[in-house]
Image 1 (cartoon, rainbow, N blue to C red):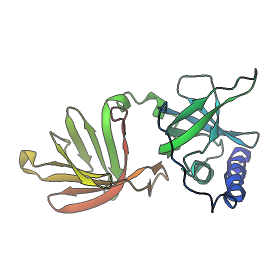
Image 2: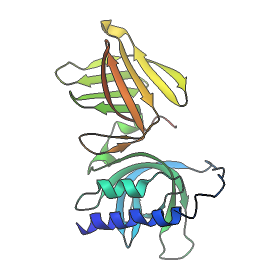
Image 3: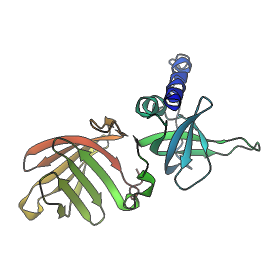
Image 4: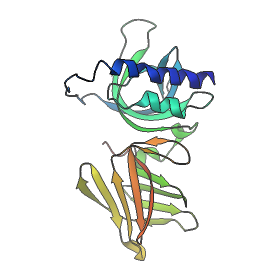
Length: 224
């Protein structure tokens, strides 16, 4: 439990600093030079560290985008205090020898307990993945179409059309194979009711008028 408590301690740090920033004027944020990365989050020496998949380098996390990653990590950490994170941000390289570089985190796509997410071979080909429960369902969208898997139903693989709805909301829809399938996506942080994972979008699946809700995130083939 020591690692999990360490994450909780880290999460409390910005609460004090935030009191001094309430009256600060808004500042424009440059997105130049940002990159999307997946890797492992851990707590070390009172700091949150990020280690990209298949790399040995570690970066001190600075939540420059106000993503609340510290608080989210504290609530989700297990006894080992390790989490998988899918993020976008700037890398600031340290000039001092033996000093960790810094990740200025701007966007949190996904945060979950997982020891295998780095090995997801489909991630780079995906445009979007959405999941939900009661009953279980999973939707993967790529350049080849969408595949919908539902508990007790055969997989449905069909082409789709995307419609932008404003305010960064959008809809994936199809009426192939005699079924009307729609996925309505909203840029609103979503917590999975079963796994506790945090994703950056909420989703509503509608199949022939039946509605189920869940969470969603962009895959590696979509640069949003």
